Image (tube, rainbow, N blue to C red; front, side, top):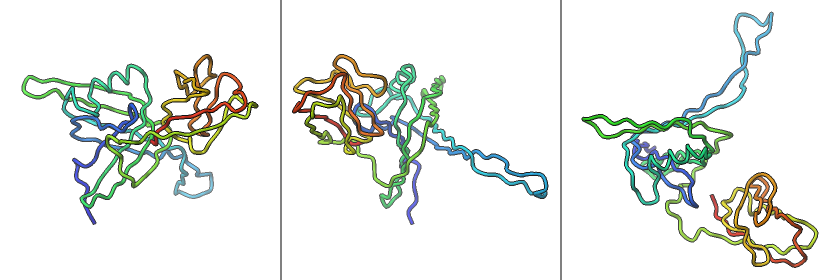
Length: 226
């Protein structure tokens, strides 16, 4: 049995194709709450009974403000993401002294960012994140500054549809979609594609174009594993 030290608990954010830690964090916490509903009825006795209802989860972090770090996220980066109302894919990773990993991954909204400066202390920050949707558990370490991760998926159109689906593309970071040598300049994840857009459905691995693809049109998708 190996212990997990505080310095080996790290929050990673998936940004610009790679997992980046939030720089200079001093402490962090992940809280999961199981909501319950009472199921007691008249005549069931003095002991009340309950059942699980929904689950909620939150993450918080505090640390010292540092403004520059290669492939890391600073307080400034997090605030810009908050102002942009971004939803972040994060990993809360713990690593024990034997290099065993226990991490949980999910999507969060940035609900609270504060920083405080005192005359006799460094500037300190606090970040609070609200989980949205499920947490998934893994024992695979997060790759840091990954290399050679970009992969290519190829497809030949049959002239009958404006879309195609592949399990290979489920839950990926799609970088570029090219049809007949023409790149889709914008990858969207909701709505209907127009012009040079392509719609990507992460849950099904579906790519949709704004027009029916002609027979034998060659398509390729550049993507990365998340």
